[in-house]
Length: 70
Image (cartoon, rainbow, N blue to C red):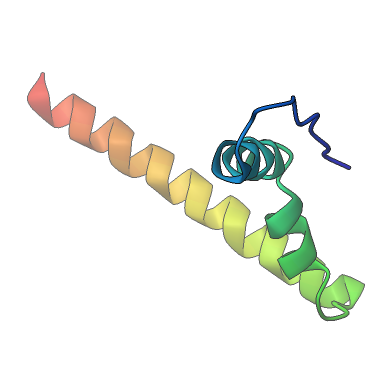
């Protein structure tokens, strides 16, 4: 869990900014949104399969785009 040390004389705004930066770095908000509802293993596999397909198609598109410039 993220935590910050507030030094004497430090205002709330700067402490809040530090805390938000630390939360963003640790991807806590993303993890909470992902775990908000139960996702069955079949749905998880389906999403992974779709993501893999998108990744392959994106690489193929970039490769074809690069080759067309040669």
